[in-house]
Image 1 (tube, rainbow, N blue to C red):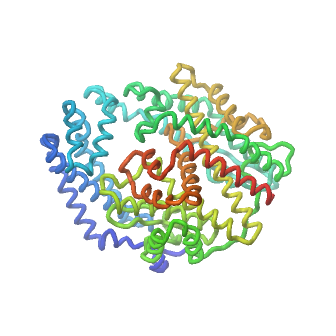
Image 2 (image 1 turned 180 degrees about the vertical axis):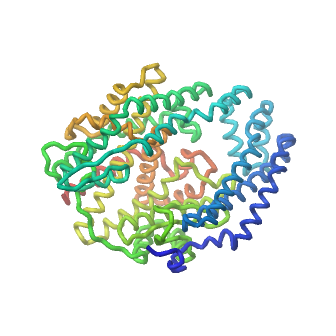
Image 3 (image 1 turned 90 degrees about the vertical axis):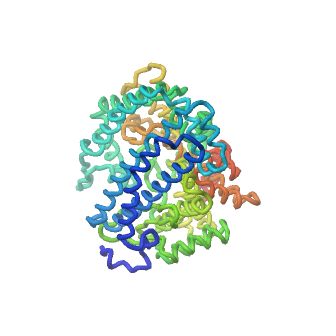
Length: 589
């Protein structure tokens, strides 16, 4: 593997656009450090008038922007080579300063919420506080769930152990669980979290069956501990929801995005209505694999063998630009600028952080980290991460710093729009039948894994929390029975009834961050709807740019509505697209 110095400059991101030198970083670090006493002292007068509040908020957000620049630069430098102790040190110092800044301004929200009735509402209406209006109105919305000072203090004291269940599960799952190994055809296959999926994607069915049962045996052998741990996590969610006067744990979890429970439940209902399409997929999988009875260990087996399609970085750039051309010349110009002006760190080098991401600091263009491998997946990764980057670019250009950052609920929409557009472009243009089949299979798998599977997870979470709220015990039997029934419902009559899969809930770490996974399903659905409308509706591109430019200036549902997207309609469009893609695949199969 090449060292960092062996990578040509044109394939490295230009972090000098944030700081020209480490001396500049140190200067801003000292500036922020020097601001902390004054920020803390603002507590005495920040709420006395709209003018004082504006001055205080201006100073706080200036401090937060400095911190963002310091931390982003240090972490991204460290990601270039994680063995570089100098940048490890910078990142640690920035993280430490973050803790100190948070402590210095922690008084703000409780102080504002303690103001007499009508005072904060009056401040929020003042023109000079326009940049902070959404933040203040959102704070007011939470007022009904803020407790008396003593009660808040007790809840904050409980914070040290309230996430104990998640911590215990993390240690069990990542440190203490041993998955053993499988012997097959004279070879020993060591099982880990990482190797499991790879083995389940293999073509040898006997090996898949052995791996499947061995892997879940590890969870079964600790299932009483895991059930008690997950039950504790659910009861924690229920406790905090009741303490803060929410209708339910689901209501509490959706509150931060101002999403009504009806959206969550409607997602589940609409996916249920379209489960016959999933059943068709399962039946087709059974037919292609040539088995009498499909089993859950067959769900990852390849329906199309790997294609030997190679794309250099230059070819990948060209393909992405062509695939995203429907987004207009302006969008394309920004993409070309990203490629030409070193926003992107392209190739793997020794010590570089693996995977891919888009990140950056307000006031500077976004950046993208890649580890390009000259394959088709890497082409999709470029399109995906540039979707994030362009979302940030448009939001930063249109919004002041306080409202530039967008919520997780919409974070995957723009990136998925780009992936779907690239998929459709490839399906229209590739000549090789096997490659087309491979791309279509990849597309279908996204519906199965990102929409249907995540909705099944979301339904399991909802049912588990409802059981706890009714006082019903969360036992190994009740949890496995609930999950097993859902798995049978979502996969249909052509899927075998091996009881092993009923333990799958025990291996899903996302369940300890309750009611999060539904955002994958809604995000993908909304992206599908946007692409559909870009193809069908005049003026949709401008609406989409309004969405991209919205940042965090409104709640996610409202931002989507500005693009003409309603989540319920989007799920319907997504499920119909799933059916259409499946029909095309059936013809090729």
